Length: 141
Image (tube, rainbow, N blue to C red; front, side, top):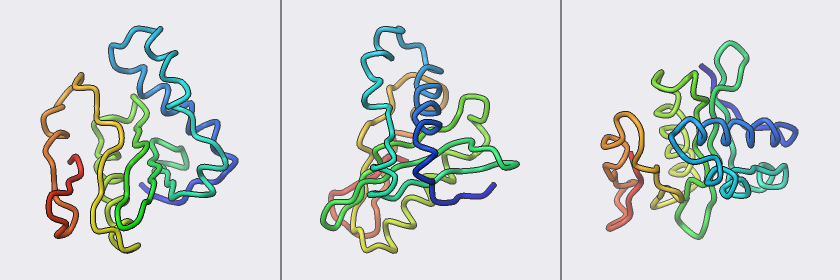
């Protein structure tokens, strides 16, 4: 697996990956449709904020998009394609996002859109972990 910066021309593919990943969970089609704007990644967003993809055998298997504000970072997107879930790609992307945020000077990090509470092993992902020593600031594990 390789994690690299996303390219602006990958915006449509990343938006598609976010939609497929969200649709993997048992949501009504109407709800997925309502979330489409939030599941869209634009070329402008990729250019403006850290966005990285995980590749396996030259195929994109997941990505994250991180927003930064003052001394904190927030994950706006972290998605793994359904056929690649359970193989550690999400964990690797999260570790990469936290490491880059720390190198950039972020004292804290958070998940902008907490997982739905539906799906396997969900409790593990809800455990908060401090990002460095920022008191009271957590990131979903």
